[in-house]
Structures are given as C-alpha cells and as structure tokens.
Image 1 (cartoon, rainbow, N blue to C red):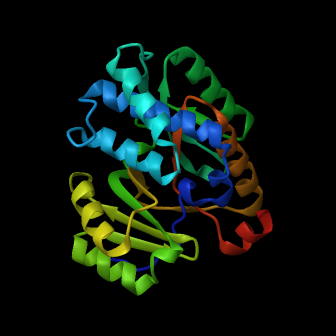
Image 2: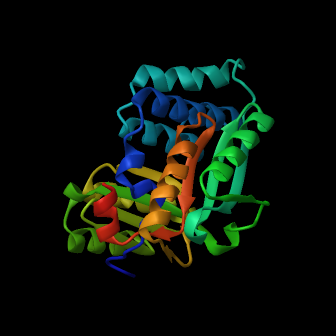
Length: 247
C-alpha cells in the first residue's frame, strides 16, 4: 500500500471544486433521483442511493432538497435520465472519461464532442481509454482528518487497497465491493468522509507540460460546466511548479 503518490485526478484540482453551489446541487439531485428510481427510495436498502445522499450531505446540501429529489423518483414524475460514458483524449495525450446523466442523448453528445474539439481534444469511441483505468471505490478526506501516518494506519486497518496523501487531503482507494464496508470502518476513526464514490483510477499517469495543462484545464472546466456531465476523470499528472503557475 502506498502512503503517498504524485497522482492527481480531476477531482483534486482546486479550480474544479469551485463550481457554483446551485449547479452542484442540481447534479447531486439528479444522481439521487436516478438512484432512487433504479431501486428502493430507502437509502438503507439502496447502496447507490446511500452513496448519493451521503455525498450530498458532505456538500452541505439541505435535507429538504435531498428529500425532494428522492420524492421526485418515488412519485414517478422524474425525467428518464440515461447514464452515458464518453471517452477521449485531451491535450498532451491525456485520457479522459466523462460520466453523464442526461434526458437528451443527442444534446449531451453534441456538447461533449464540441468541448473536446474546441479545446485540443479528440472524442473517441466507447472503450477507447477506459482499458487504462480501474473501476474502484474512492473515499476522500480533507487534510484536517489527520496526518499521513494516521490516515494510512486507519486505511490499512479498514482493509483499503491504497492511500494517496497530499497537502490538500487524502484519497483512499478500495475494491468496488468493499467500498461501503471500508467507508464505515474509516468513519469510526477519521469521522465522516468528504465524499464516498465509485471512481476511475488510471493504471499509468501522463505528465503534462505547462502549455498543454492550461488547455487541458480549460477543457475540463467546459465539461464540468455542462449540466449533464456528472464527473470527469483523467490520467494526468501536472508537476507542482506548473500547478503553482496556473494557480
């Protein structure tokens, strides 16, 4: 198990965390509604819904908003959202996976394709890059949860696979099937996680030069701003000195 890694995925970039709250709540609500519609509206009996609700709470989404999203599904008046995954390459040969929930496949496909084309990327076919990633469970804690050694010890005890600690926080990786069990064990030691989710972890990372990094981040921002896009994952690693320059 690694205690520290230079790996930085899209979710850790500071700019990507600064989305408008209303847009963020909209995406969280959509995931809650889809999860509730696909299974029972009871989070205790629906693992995907439990994940969605916990992540919404971690982002300070009001309880009323969460309940409204669940009720929307149980009343049968929710839109029919479709889960779609797009794959492609960004500037510098970075592999990107874009996860979307949409009620209009054509609109979303056009928007994603345009975002890639206008920002130095190429949208590929399904499976074009996902073979270079693993589907894993990801539990994230802020830096204040503890130092690297404390988090590493807790993760080992909980049965996690890997830990990556930076000054911004801790990323704890697990098998998909063990995600809930590991998250529960960690909560007893480290408190409530910042997020618990399924993620795409790259097998190898690509170091990105300054010019490509700037264009890459613009592409990611455009994708993030799309209402239909839920998450963007990538295999890039930007050196700290370049990150400092880009702010």
